[in-house]
Amino acid sequence: MKHLLFLGLLALAGATQAQQRTAFAPGQPWPDNKGTHLNAHGGGVLYDQGRYYLYGEHKIAGPKGNSAQVGVHCYSSKDLYNWQDEGIAFAVAPEGSGSEVEKGCVLERPKVVYNKQTGKYVMWFHLELKGKGYEAARTAVAVSDKATGPYQYVRSYRPGAGQWPLGFKEEWKQPVPGEKDLKWWTPAWYKAVAEGSFIRRDFEPGQMARDMTVYVDDDGKAYHIASSEDNLTLHVAELTPDYQGFTGKWNTIAPAGHNEAPALCKKDGKYYLITSGCTGWDPNAARSFVSSSIWGPWQPLANPATGPQANTTFNSQSTYILPVAGKKDAFIFMADRWTPKNPIDGGYIWLPLTFDGFQPRLTWADKWDLSMFDQPKNGTKTAQ
Ligand code: GAL
Image 1: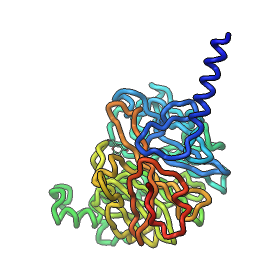
Image 2: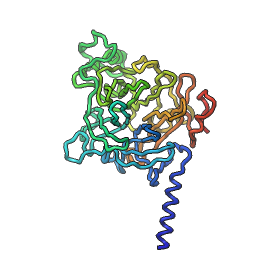
Image 3: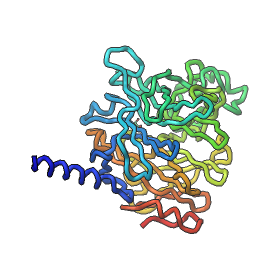
Image 4: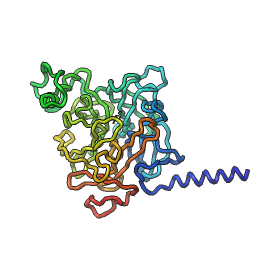
């Protein structure tokens, strides 16, 4: 009995200890309130009624863990350092059910937004159908009455079906003979991509959607941003007022720029986009863009990362930019350190996103906390 009491006290002490994180330690194991490394990869954060909710891919051990075996895991926090396990917010459908979201599908980069008009929490994610590799290139939506779920599956989409993007010229609407045979990365091919060769190809079924994010603007309008056209071009598309579908208004970003892992924020009326290049699970140098309108034109800027390992974004790939509640111009860059051989071990790189003029900046810090955002505002102080 005494022994049990002792063990109980030890467990309690452990739990209390796990509750007392006061800083971010990028790349280090990040225990939740039960002492288990967070399992929310390719994640995003929703701030709702004084609490942050983190959603991400629940991964399992072993290579099978790169496909969805469980679903989307949710955690909640008041301070961003200490996360409480809220369980599986969206569960994959049982194996053999024939559902688009059945166990073994690919379900990546879940992002949740709250819709004030409907009072629903809306989750979007990149969906690939079971056994079909990455060819389906769909985006999918699920809804819930509660932030923590359970989310009910609604449907999947190929966005932009039957809709040309903004500014698409009349003469671009007809197929160009030979365009499919052009050699990739040649000047003629770049021109063809910029003038819609892939958009024409996918006009009827709808445009491909792989790595994605969802952004809600100050006016309550929401946008879906995804890697499309064989990952060559990002597409930004307006969501319907209930955030569960597409209005049909969309545009391209950086045609043939080969951008993945889009993450977006807004500061002083300008939109900033951080992306990665396309090297699968291997990290590469991040890119950044600025625009006065979500529809563009997006001006390419430099790699936001500086210092050692800037060329691999500190061995990580962007997933989300988190605005810190109640602090002006305080943004956290969230990224994944993928471990595809044992996906459950994947690490999290959260760093302060600062600005040098218009240029977003990321500087490595072994340890940092939110007080770095409390300095006199020029936004350029780096973490220790
Ligand atoms: C990455 C992408 C991940 C995942 C992976 C699969 O480029 O960002 O979300 O799709 O490829 O190889």
